[in-house]
Length: 312
Image: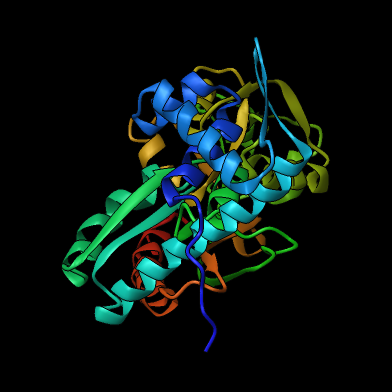
């Protein structure tokens, strides 16, 4: 039987070191960890002594992670993620649908789907506490990889997600929205073809939103161009259109909420509408996979209700 020697450092010291590496500043790391800076600095020095290498170069303007530090901190992230999974596995073995689950969600989905799913999730899984975090896709993928999230609600890209499993929740069509007095409102009734966008200029989201990339792909297919003005959110896009600044694409589940004032004209693209596939994704190694598949079924059912109510 293999004998495991206890490490000469603590989990807390690893957490402090990772916080310093992330913030590049001892003071900010101490604030993030809710600990006094002298205490954090002393713990980092103890960790470096235990490992026998310097993790950081201390500079007047901040810190630099050393080459050795980069290697060892990568191992530290993996170790902490495995510890989180250990605790999660214990919870899952006791009751897969109890305890806390940390779920991420992209901003172009969160305000439209989460309010519709909160009550069904709570009634279906009363012993489960879902903690949602809204971030853009790159941040959510990094947090999934680091073990800071158990799963994330994302839009599936063309290449999928490496090292992740996922359950498809549904396929959501895009709609074109214009001001009420736009020329397209005189040429079309409730639906149009992508050809109608040829030569048009569309408002799009800022970089970092996956919906921006998907809308750009539609523009390229249809011969449309991107406007020089960008928005930070779907709500801002809709308000700009209502104000007569331009036209844009909206994901279907946002349509009802963003057009409550009936200030937009909305057009579907019929059976050949551009769309995105929404999924719940998680690490292949997570011990909560069974619970996440169950949650995905509930999310999918609620998404289906929203999609069924969309104008055809």
